[in-house]
Image 1: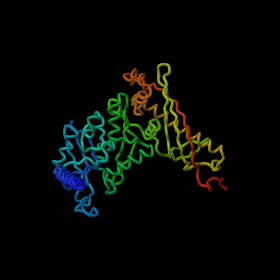
Image 2: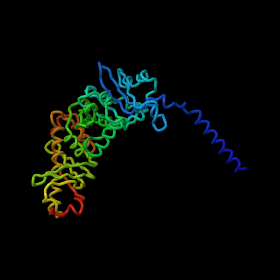
Image 3: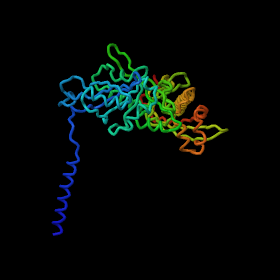
Image 4: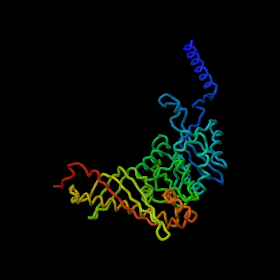
Length: 389
């Protein structure tokens, strides 16, 4: 009897759950009734926000093998509103379909829009339930977000996917920072931090156009645009911010020629001290790399002296790049995009509390000492080790 009751209870519970889930299920929506976002360009026009979106072409995407009624994989729509959210919601008047933000890959901030406070642009994406915090950010350099989204690329692939891949791979190679919605929001919550966002250009290529990453856009701690930095300076930001993943570094050899090395691992560590009322940041960077190419016959041997020469040259190059980057950041723009203020707060909170309100003066006066611990893992094949005959 007891066993029978247990079985009946299980059956009842199963039926109850089945009907409960069915009753709570939201009516299904056809793919053709959704605007599946891939990329969003944000601009400012006549004191209104203007959004340009790349969406999946449902006629193409919804067909077996992708062979629908249209050759284009995506469609592009534009709408305006007093806020970004209003502009995006007005897209329904263009297509008649409901916007779906969960699959959006990248948000492109037009140059004029970049001059507004970033929080005005990102607020919608931070709060919207369907929006992902992992969407990547970039700034359209000398262009509008619409120009980037509408670029006439040679390929018929999803343009936002190409841009997303460029941003991801460039961050992996330590060329530009990887900036997602969540990263930007966290930076803006810091009382002293600025933000460094990759900049993308649209370059002419005959009748077509190409994307090209070109340094970064700096935003001050008030989240407003400050200045662009070049590619070399952007690479230095990765070193100062402990964001070295992989990448290539060139080094000057004693004979005046160059060698290139592939970084396969990097790690940074700071020690902060107060000296004469100022701050001194001691940075130790440890990297492991492989020799990729070298000029000059004298460096074809594998003796200890040659290895030490390479390690010294790589260390000097890395330190010089980081030091030059900090000089630029500490210049008249004073953008603490390497979060020295946050590092101070985590290590010496009392000292930080005394300095945070005067950070615009403190940051440009910070002293940096950087040392590099370089390990060269390999310098080539055996045939490369012997001198040329």
